[in-house]
Length: 571
Image (tube, rainbow, N blue to C red):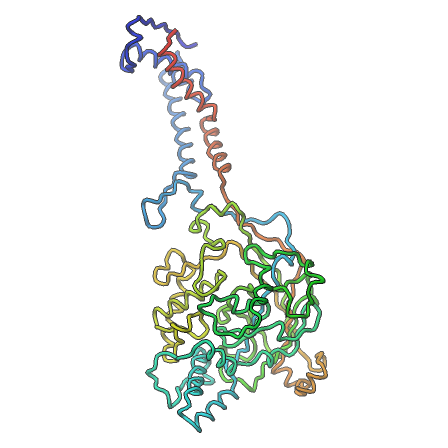
């Protein structure tokens, strides 16, 4: 039992100021300390001042307590006292290691139906960028009238499109004789660009012969729209129109009728929050074969007949320049709000084959808890955090494409024809500037996706916190002309489609569908919340010291309240 002491105070002592150095007050502090050490619930402390302990025993317990506290301190440092600097400024210090990587990606506990995300946007490009018949027609015109600036400019623009081509058509690399090769840029506005692309590339009506969606035959022009990509003029299904995807500064002067109606059709869906209505809430309101279909389209069931089927014609006789060393098509599955980047990410399918693309989507959803975490630490952008200059919707590839455009213009004073741009201030690079464009794009490719080392390009392209993609399995078989299901009108217009040789060298059939009705999405959530943080620290303190909230109350009681009470009323 601790010793008790009686301290006598005379009347004059009550008027004296508190002085911890006086003998009486020193004795009082010593008594409170002994009382605390003997009665506290913190492990090991009662053995430090316990009477009748040998020096060895007392030293052993002092060492044990120090080691236990040191272990607790070390473990807590691993959790909360790791300093790190960001924004390159010592004023911004984070005192929590769990804040350096605070995001946990896990599986959702429930499955998600496929109708909660759009059907994949499918972009298809003929590997032939420029039709031979059009080049021959242009050169015939220039031969008769070499001073015709409109066709001379189109011929030069064709050279620009075919820069990344094989040596097979190296004759395209020569500039027309009436052109001054010292001219750096092509004076082409948005309307002229569209006109040239429509003339030079294969028209979607020539490429797409037969289309079906959800088991219903559809007019291909209702499902596909022409788009400009790094592979030339392509055709896209379920993609946002340029009038919605681009901001006003970069819309290439398209004649979009009923723009308000188009905006309304696309107003039911958002990249981050998804669809506003269920898949069957439109029944009775619209005709699924009309242009008033809510966008983007979605599937309500998996399987071949609930997907998209397209019959394609490559028109081998029209090949003039190709970005590959083969004949066929390039395709890409992407989100409806993404600009397709065909050269780097497109996959090929060959003529003479029937190709099946079975999609198992992947989706990641950002929970509300991560909204308070800086994008630097979570390494992704929430809606509205990263705004683009030319595009209304942020996606990973949209950011890259815009960054490539900005950096190319900064480096070469012009941009590639397929890059988003302000057509009034950013000219299209002439073929002579192709090397400069390639160097700029290479620099962007090396740094655009690294937010810590993007000083030169200033891209800072991180993925969206809520995103989805369309991984797929591919299988194919050989087409046979006699087995093709062709309408009489199509056979009458193209009798060559019954020729086995023509089918093997030109036609391709593609089927795109979901593999399963449900999929398991990923959740991007908080790794350590405030509750987890205190639970971790409390667990370490309890394990090493037996420390709890009541232990803190004991310290306050003995070393503050009791000490004051003893000083004021010693009896």
